[in-house]
Image (cartoon, rainbow, N blue to C red):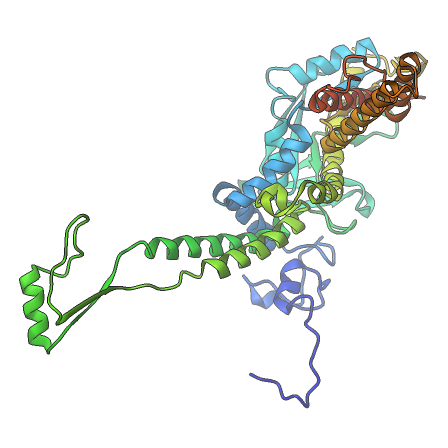
Length: 483
């Protein structure tokens, strides 16, 4: 319907009523359960005002898993986050007490846990499902901790302690036994013992509001656009494939009788075989049929949709596809906000891994294998302080900002080249240049100088690797807890 020019135009709304209802954004003001329309105006018992309805959450999980398995862009998004957050050098830990170190080593290398080896699949599962529930199994005498992941689709409800959304207390599970439900006590620090208790880890990193009880899949905002991108590419491929079929338009002078006679003499309407000739008189005209595939329009539409998908996923489009559209300077400029987003996801994950490890330490304390307080030695300063045993460990991941090391490496190479030219022109002695190079290297980077990597002909990749390793080591040392 075309609106009259006398009627002022209305600004497009941010979401349709159906979208508002499906996301729970209305706070229960309107919208209802599409499965049971009679429940309009009501909300589930215990559900917060703006909680995402369960059917929306389950549909988002279903589509996220399906997209990862069948859509290359969805897989690229998830694998990019997993690779940067826990891939490459992997997840490791720093412990500042030898007794605690033994417990942590035992927990991480337990053949039933293999915590370092399963980091990628654990994070991938959390990104696709939005939540992680680990049942914690503790040896009654040894305090040894093992865990079992549960499908969070079976979670019926989350009960908060004293109604505080920051204190999840119990996760209620539907285990397929009729009306009987199973409750997991979420791990937390007991105020009396100052040790962690509970029988499950419950991680919900992608909540929208602090009052939300549940978390949503990481891909949820871009699922529709991923489907649209897949549709555009599929249509383009289908039309391109169809255009490879050869079709001729044949005009025969005369009526239907002449047409039938011509087809009969040819032996059918087949296309001539390759390497043969088609002989006819001037009464027959043969020409190939052509039609536009719409490749240009589809390619433009695909780029626009992919830009939206990449932006919604927190990545630069050049990280997923079409790197030829951006030069190095543009890629580096776009990389800084992208790396910060990836680092945010990584930090949340490493905090969860630290909490899981500290739970294992507290169980060792409860089993009398460790003292509640231990001496912690800071390897950077050598200072020794007394802290809680669980605070002696810090979990770290691979360095996300690898491009920064490349930039730094080039700066250091430029410094070395400039000093060499000053020496060649006689403006500086070789001894003074050596001192300046060492001073510039250590002041700029804050890491020890390496003469092998300080040469003008040094490989920038080798320098970047050395810088990256030194920075990572320094960060781990800084992360060591103090009193």
